Image 1: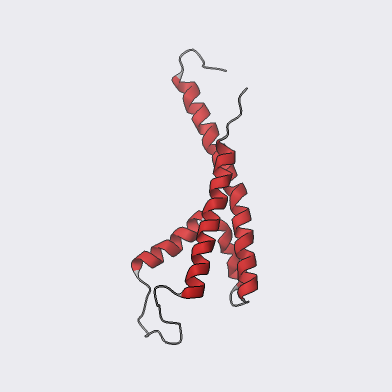
Image 2: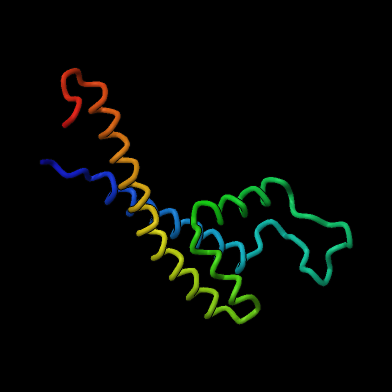
Length: 120
């Protein structure tokens, strides 16, 4: 029996995705490259550009451990960075499970496509 390497590769991908979003968040938080106004200076009807809003939603979709940051709002930079590290580490097992499910589905589909392997 050969074991699939797909779940392990998905786990590495999950950690890489988490690290990428963490680096982008750190860069945006530290340097404000888009020069967005702070909440004190923003006009009442201001909203971020659609691309930026899309990237924020994508970040929470692809790195679900970030939802834990709800509990650490306005607690400081160190706690925020700690939660980012935790979210990156949680991302690995989540993606690993997704890889297991995908590998199993691929195995089932491949078994159905082979003639004469029904019932095994």
